[in-house]
Length: 223
Image 1 (cartoon, one colour):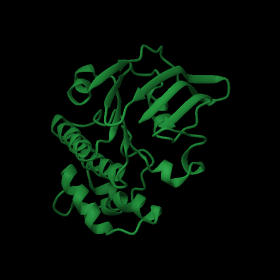
Image 2: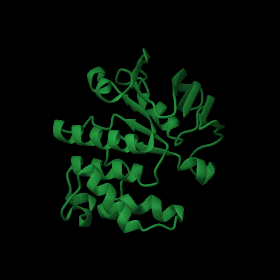
Image 3: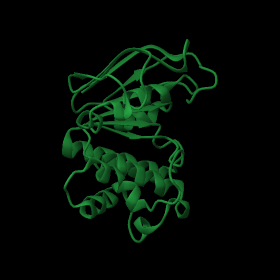
Image 4: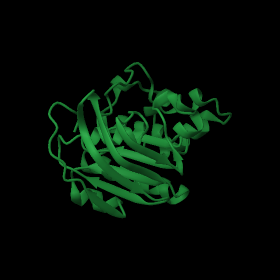
């Protein structure tokens, strides 16, 4: 379960880009958040993914109120949420191989599992075959990289998945494959999904319901 209540958030004090926004996702539910470009929906997605601390409002995950963000949150709570960004190359280390990119959260978590087996399983699920896992980020296309980032988001088996326009830069074939992988993961785990985007028809294909966020544009912030 994910609940955002009366969220106000921004990057400069006194200049919020998200104002008093609320949305809730029940256990096992897929909710689409439909909003226009430039309204701050990526900021809200980062709040939902526990990567950005709101200025006001509350975030609750599986009944636990969240205080802080990123590594200021206990690991057990932080790893409950997986996140897929709309721009796969943003902030990615170009020297990483795709296999290492997917495995990185596992290594950091200290979990004693067979890393290679888990990475291979997810690579198959998202459609990364052949020698792609041995290539580094500079050697693959955006679609292949986004598949790897989805696998990375799922590698710790999160109970909540937040997708920020995950398919925005993808061709139709890759978009369909990514959505199918998310749906397959949710069928297996009953994970909740918050999918943020501006394409009503697309959100309708993989969400149980859609919340319309009629927000005004916020200049100079992520869409």
